[in-house]
Image 1 (spheres, rainbow over the protein chains, first blue to last red):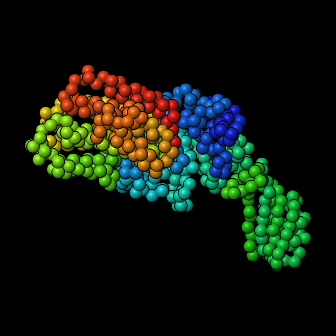
Image 2 (image 1 turned 60 degrees about the vertical axis):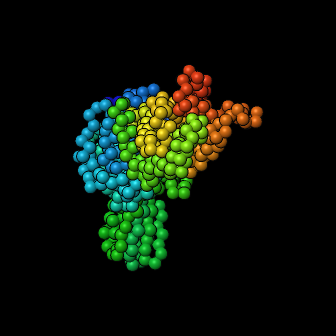
Image 3 (image 1 turned 30 degrees about the vertical axis):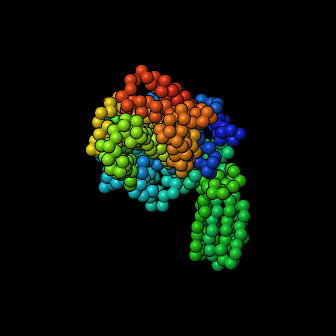
Length: 305
Length: 249
């Protein structure tokens, strides 16, 4: 099956600013693909080029076999879009918005009431947009993005500004979209979101893609370090830890030891060493790198800076 | 897309009615002001001296209708810039809705509200403006529609250029209201000094006033082809520039 989205050599400039440069990637059928990077990295520009809202200066884009520039209306009938920081009319009611959106598509829209119910908006159907909470607004935007039963759903910074509880609820909704066989393309600057939600991620910075893979493989490739923190009063412990293969450093303060090394079997080796030498431990923790560390490693700075 | 246009227009009307002061500001206030003015000037003079050229008999209806048209346009300018600033225009554009459908819906809302206000005025004004009853209301409505389209196109040009919603209304007001002073509504254009006369001839409102006054007085359409041509030219010019410079976000 050919990729649902094919982006190749896309470049977009605003005056002297290069927003997106030589960006290429494929998104496969049925996956949640995340474009991750700090604010201003070019995520939204890339996404809006794919949605047909912007025209790239160079490069080619194909979505569901369509050209987003020339066949924008055909494309928009088959995709669902949630825009970053979008608003609706302040005093439009939830059901009116869903009803309007449903009327815009030629094919039979899905059951609006069931959609509202599945998004937990049934008791808000008569509420004005301006009176909805941040989470409810985002859920409404998801409803609007799903109303035409689209094949590809675009979600731009979906959970920005939401509290953790609302964020988790939204993540479940996105997983449900994938469960229905749809392809999801999302952007986020939250590494935790990418790690929990995305099948594959592309890391973008200064308009360029740095690497693309599954979160696990990205971490393995760029951050193979493993760290174990444990507490023991055994005076011989430090010496024994140093003999564990692939351990690179052992530091201690009081009775706490920090063991760093590489490879997945490091944790096993440490546990093995503890039991073999009957070293009593009162605390044991592993610190595994995540996408945040990958980003730091690849760009030299934290994503929040 | 006609379904979308109708739905959007209907929703926009409902939303407008929900605005605090929305319906009151555009429909009730002008009618009340009109009635109050009518009570002050209308009755006594109408009975005393039914001169067709007096400001009360010709100027006031024309002024009132143009004011309604301009305030409708100003509110359109504001709405468009608010919608742009809030990303609503962009969100609507990311659907199969054609851009002109979105804008047409807003124009329709304004025209419908303008028509509703005028109808109320005519009904209410019958008591105070006996002269109005004899005016060719149907022709006058057509003339007002032509004038409104021309004013709307200026409004769209302003909406295309004004950067933020906060400035939209004041900038629109600064552009429109002084035009009334030069339009020949209060003083005939012929009595202006030469320079002002040129300024006056450059302003589309002058032609709108000329057309509306003439039609109200029962003059023939053929006497005002120049006015109509000028209004049409303004409409084409402003619309062409707007489509080139209009920003959706």
